[in-house]
Image (cartoon, rainbow, N blue to C red; front, top):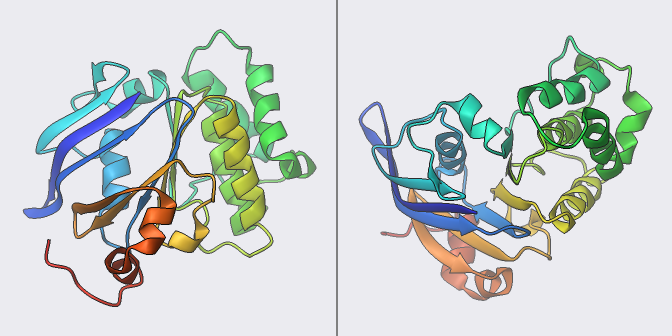
Length: 239
C-alpha cells in the first residue's frame, strides 16, 4: 500500500529527514515513534504533499506521490488527521464530517461514509449541531479523525492522536482506531509517547533526529533499553 524509501527532506537548509524508509500494508496499524522534533510530522506532511522531498520515493498503490499536489494525494485515498486537529470552528460537527465527502468521489454514498464515521466514534452523535469551536480537545480530535474517515480513504495518517488528551478520552480514540483497522484500511500513527501506542499495533518505527533507529514489534521496542531511553529523552544517540 504505502512504501516510503530513502526519504530526505530539508527545511531552510537543515536536514530534517535523512534517508528514512517505512511501509504500511492494507489492514495494518503501524506507528512512527519519536520525541518532539524527531521528524514525525515532517514525514506525514511530506507524504501528504505539504512538504517536498529532496530525494527518495513515496509510493502509494504503485503510484509515485512526491510531485503530486495534496488534493490529488487525498483523492487517491490517503486521509490525514493533523496533530492540531484543524477542525473548522465555524462549522458544526455534522458539517465538518460532510465536507470530506465532497472532496473525494467514491462508490459509497456520502450518507454511508458519514454513518461509518459515527459508528467509529458514537459519542459524536451527541454533538451533531455543536460548532467546532465549542468542542473539547478530545472531541476535536475525534471529529478530525472522523472527517478524514468520511473521505473514504484506503490509508489514514493520524498525527499524535492521543497527545494532550484526558485519560477518559484516550480509550475512545484507541477503540476508534481499532474499528478503522478492522475494516481493512491501513493506519499510520505518529506518537511521541510509546505508552500510548495500542497493544494491537503490528509494527513500530522509531525516529531519532531524522533517522530511523529501530523497526520491529512493540514488545521488541520495550525490550531494547537504548530505544526506550531515547524515546524518554534520557540520552542522545549518535546515529
